[in-house]
Length: 403
Image (cartoon, rainbow, N blue to C red; front, side, top):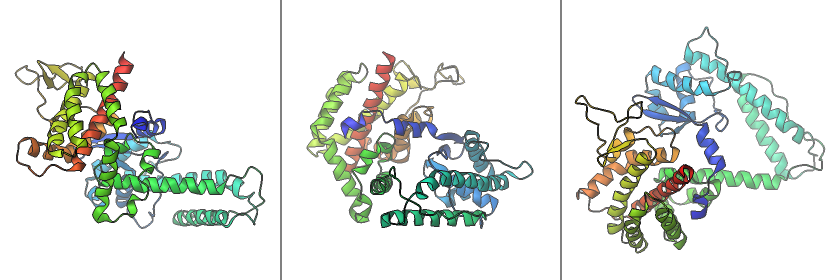
């Protein structure tokens, strides 16, 4: 795991770069999937334009997580702002909005044109293959074709256009291996389900860095009884974090970093406590170091500025932001360090920041202030150690690029 974690993931990075980000005042920074990676296909004829817009936005949002009924409660301006930002990055030849319609109605109208274009291209790609499959090909191939035809018919029916039936033709020598294709699709499907389980159990930040291979190691986890599923995920990750390979990688990352090297002795002791399952000792140490390293990252990357040892806000010119008395404005705690920092171009830091603000901050304060005494869990120790691992990798990448 640790070797793959430390290797750049081109596909994942391409996906992250494709995300459309828009800042909605009341709801924070939304990350929307490009239709290159997420084709929004759903029944829409029975939806009003406003309901359709909310459903489309719900289908596109990658992070943070919102339920459909939450988005439906948003004001029109917020939904429109998000969709306009998304459409600006989409192909205007696919999404053609009539000028004589209200925005939500125009988007719903454009959606039908988008689906027609998508399905026609899909057919052009698939029909040459299926036209050359002879009738005696393996039953699985017929099932694949039948399911594809059924799905296309269902979608096409909703937009009221004809679609020709896909016919099975003659077999040709370059026919792809349907067994292999089915296995790949099955692997992808299992990995997707595993990713949802990791997300639901507090490990979303890993998905911003892991490859399909890492996630696939959790294939089938969605079949585990929900009462013990979280524990199974944590135990699997606990085993990974207790391996000598992870310790060795961390040692190299910290000792080779001009910024992190001074922290290694502390991290090393926390690792010993973690391996010995002494979470009462590992967690407070890791909590303090997570915040310290995150602060170092903000300063090192110029996202915030240090003045007299204190982290302070920056203005749009890159200089320290001043209060009404002309003094730099300090950033006091972990939550403010996330919220007051522009992390839009720092995907891993942004993912970790979302974890801090949505989950860690309240627990961190209660633990370090002594009011939470039942904090010694394997899950929190694992989460914190993996946070530090990803932060260390960020330092390795940044310092190597800057050298």
